[in-house]
Image (tube, rainbow, N blue to C red; front, top):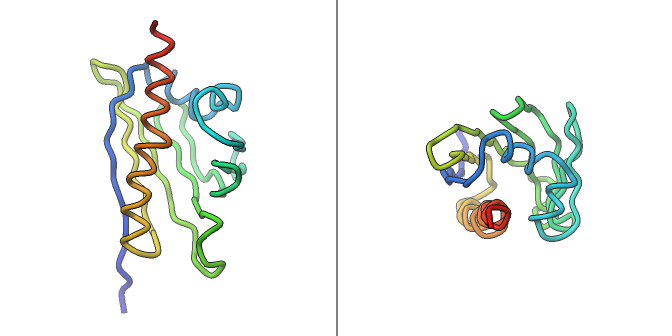
Length: 137
């Protein structure tokens, strides 16, 4: 029997160039300037990824500088038997800066997909964009 794939997709414009956005998502010194809580981001094959004081942990699966990031994602509130979800982030240059496309798949249920969509906006994309807007002033 096939299982339902619960997922979410967001498209968001960040007011910075793709190289700057990629760097702000992968360079620990820059991540610390816009994200809340402790984090780990090891930009290497199978590198550790952890955000929001260890609430979520994962492994970096793929990265192409200034183009893509992909990592597993598993909140510590999910059942131990639940498999990690997958985050794919793509960067495209647009007139206003960078279009960031986040596709987050393999959630255990629809409620988690909905909550994570809001979380990506409120705790990730908007703070990232605010960081770049503040730098313009």
